[in-house]
Amino acid sequence: MPTLRPALLHTLFLVLLLTTGQLKSNAQNESPIGRWDLTVDLGNKKVPSWLEIKLSGIKTLVGYFVAEGGSARPISKVNFSNGKVSFSIPPQWENSDKDMVFEAELKGDQLVGAITSSMGQQQTLVGQRAPLLKRAAPVVWGNPIKLFNGLNLDGWHASKASNQWIAENGVMKSPQSGANIISDQKFNDFKLHIEFRYPSGSNSGVYLRGRYEIQVEDNRGQEPSSTFFGGIYGFITPNEMAAKAPGEWQTYDVTFVGRRVSVVANGKTIISDQIIPGITGGALDSKEGEPGPIMLQGDHGPIEYRNIIITPAKGN
Image (cartoon, rainbow, N blue to C red; front, side, top):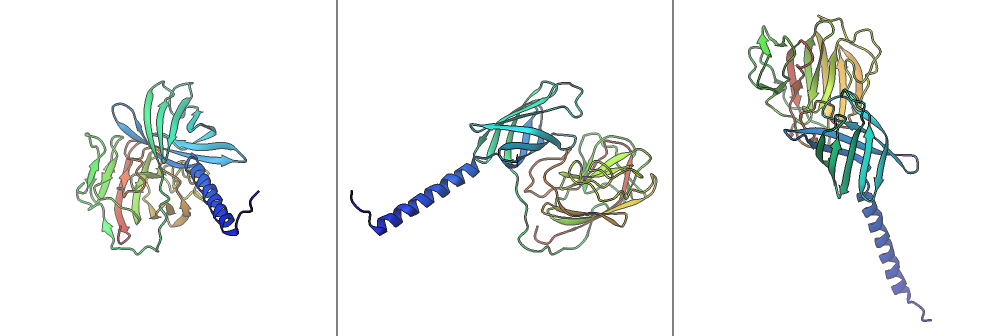
């Protein structure tokens, strides 16, 4: 048997290393693990959705799912075999006893498939891997912008044809449930100051980039929750309940850079530099890599806002 020369052995060793590395890379690319920005086709419209798949232990996949509305729901087991992803979860706000069923195929950096809703509706979906939104350099802040002029609704538009919002005495009001209201301008990273007031039992929300809701709700005296006052809806629980009594003016001061958010409510830091994993229910879209507007929720009860001032980061 001939002896291999050292140079040939070295070449074969390099080829083996490269091949092994490529196999590992391909295996990683073929894994569904990660966060996914989804677009779901309901037939008459397309709506945003979101999915996270994680490894639990040695081989079990679990996750979280956000539908068009509601909060993030846990997935006890995600099935993955031959490039196909599937899972089922019980209904949240749907009046049904049936599970929602998710079935999709992994095609490179896309998920393509369908959802059978708890109400039995068939909905097609396409998913893209969600961006990390990491910032390479420290933020340099620009000049503050008054998003609401206090006189009229210039610079804002309603989410529906019917608009119940009015401007009166420096206050943007939604006297009853109806449309949400959306700023015409869009932003990436920013600092936001906003003041609000609600009557007893009411509910609203401030959507950052139109995708991530900070809950505004009458929860004074209750234990903090990700779905209560000051929470990033369904994702981040404030470290204390800072809500005042109904009828009092209250404030949020928000710093939002990439996915990292800090919230000061009524002078108290309730969320400090936390990562928002994905879009929350009610988001305008799932295009997380793009700038987005400020959206104020007006479909859950009466609400008033004033002194809406945003300071965008320079260069974005």
